Image (cartoon, rainbow, N blue to C red; front, side, top):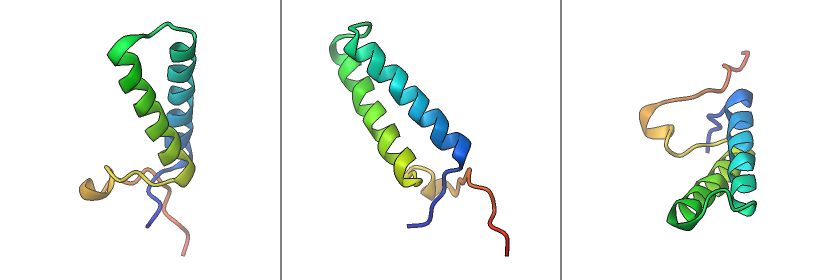
Length: 69
């Protein structure tokens, strides 16, 4: 598994996940939307921590800086 997420991409995902979690646990969002948003937040956290986004792979997207040779 080749890492394809840069620092800024990962940071944005963590921030968005935290915002969603705060909104969920403070009951700012409820119902089906809240459940879907929480699942997305969990996915964002997992992908941010492992540094790999499976949806980027088929499109050849990488936000990671090129490694020096």
